[in-house]
Structure formats: structure tokens, C-alpha cells
Image (tube, rainbow, N blue to C red; front, side, top):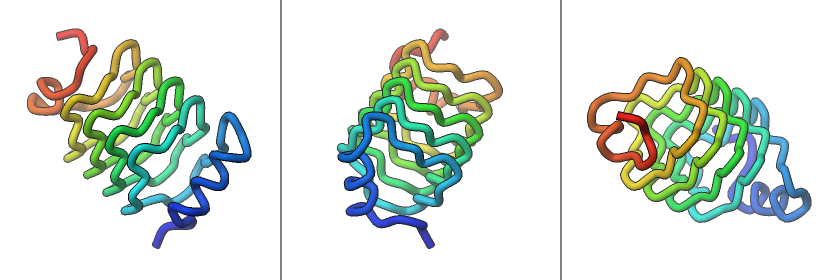
Length: 119
């Protein structure tokens, strides 16, 4: 069960430029199209979350769980994804240019779907 609703996440994002959502369970929510630029989402549970077209540039997602998340056309440019779990995540069209992917395992399909990865 997620800690917050989509409406509550939108309210948090509206109040601050860099939301603090570290360790928060957002699993399974529809957070598509939201602006998480620079957000602190370290160790957040985003498994199964719909993040289609989310703007996550410079977001801090270290050790976050993104297993099964939908990140279609999301912008993760320069995001910190160190040690993230991305198994089963849909990265079709996701911009991962200059993202920190230290310790992240991507399968061949994910590598071919995402943009900005060194091949």
C-alpha cells in the first residue's frame, strides 16, 4: 500500500522545488507526467509505478526500487540511479543521458530502449 496518493504527491511537488520523498512507498501509483526534477527519492519504492513522461532530471534515486516501473519517455537525464533496481522496468524512449548508473543492471532490451546510454 503506497504511503501517499497521486494527489498528495502533486501537492508536495507544488510546495517545493526539490521534493523530499526519500524512503517513501509510491508503488503502483500513476505518477505519469509529473515533475520530479531534483527530487530526493533515495531508497523510495517505485515498483510498478507509472512514470510515463515524468521529468526526473537530476533526481536522486540511489537504491530506489523501480522494478516493473513504466518509464516510457521519462527524462532521467543526469539523474542519480546508483544501485537502483530496474528489473522489468519499461525504458522505451527514456532519456538516460549522463545518468549515474553505477551498480545498475539493465538487460539487453532495456539497453536498446533507453536513449543516451553508452553502448
